[in-house]
Image: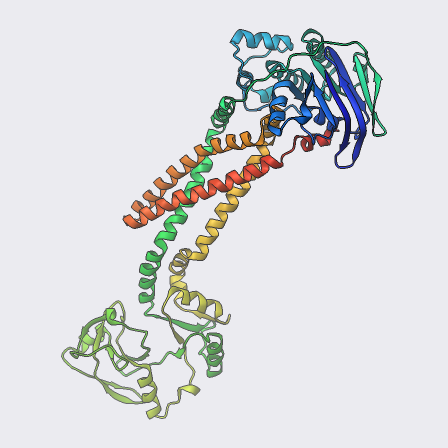
Length: 590
């Protein structure tokens, strides 16, 4: 017998004022009331799944209200079966696996014949290999009852069990319920809107005007049933994890591999990016001769006024007009900046013991061969004539035309000595010295729309390739991975919500459910660490880079990143599991 005194329900408004309730063995007790009056909330309180809003709760002479939360969970797991309107079964399992899970949960051993007798008792004739997901509503309810019979509870609570069933299934189900009450001496509570079945109830309570009124009852006394006291082991939860992995292994493997590849690429880039930018970036800068050339988009010359405007836009850089002129032999005389050439560009020294300085004069390899043994060259055109003695010869890859390069300042002095003022002269292009790949993007972004960088047309793909390997993009990948994991796990939790509610209805405490998820996620963690490590080693081998320090550092980061992600995921699960309330899930069907 169950006796509840001074029960007052608020969820969140007042649903039931202080009321008393008595449930007896070998009776079917009905809870009636209009929609929204609090029937489902009342059933949750009776099932110890609510907020324990009662003064006393005496179950077969045991004052449950005085028990600790853990003891209440044990009491629920052993003595109360709650069959909700939305039947919570593990949908991907077969009928046999579902029954085996409940057997382990209640430390009971059944053979195949016992299982068949159990299904016969609830009038369920189905193949044991049938998936739970393929059962009809009535079959699912009877399977759920069969599973609860394994527990041999003293109290069976049915929330709207006849909803959505045809009359034939209603009759079958009610016969099963009568067997529970009259043959097995159980307490049975049913909430329903089906008035065609109400007359079969032994006792009826009706919720009206926030009061719980007894409208039909019996004064007969019945013997109390025996309370169960089965200790909860981790064996059924391990079985639950193994079944989850069995039916979701490809999803787990696919997600682990996808996450591993993302992590491997990120770690590879973060360890390799400095070397890549240093090697590839320097090669690209050398290819550009440490300078960019800016021209007008329409092909016109750049006027002094336009030059001043560009100079203001590129205030962080020193820009100069492209000074070059030809003589009668098509030899080009060019002005160069100190950043233009370095020692690596020099094929040989013509004048011995000359240090690299601003006064160095460079000659192209092709012109040097033409000059042969001559140590100087006479440059003559319509504006001026000058004899030049080069000190360095450039590689053919650096300068492929007939050209002489003199320091920019010397070029300006040469022009001024012949009354040529560059401040009032148009130029076909502007030269901007650069020292890194970042300078290219900064200049390109700051440049007015009417002007462009000549080299961008040919080297844009190479420049973009180096920009992929920077800290900003690595940070974006890491953020993407975190968000990907977050949203995927939230989606997974939403799909597991029914499983979590099922476990809670069975009296499994939050702590045990969280431990179950930790145990389940360890498989994914091990798989992710192994796959990520293999991917990183493969990437290093693929790119012909076997830097032991980088590989070891990457593998250490693999363990660190995966551990952090693992803790992050478990934290999400723990918070979600604690937040999920059975009463909130069923609130919509009050």
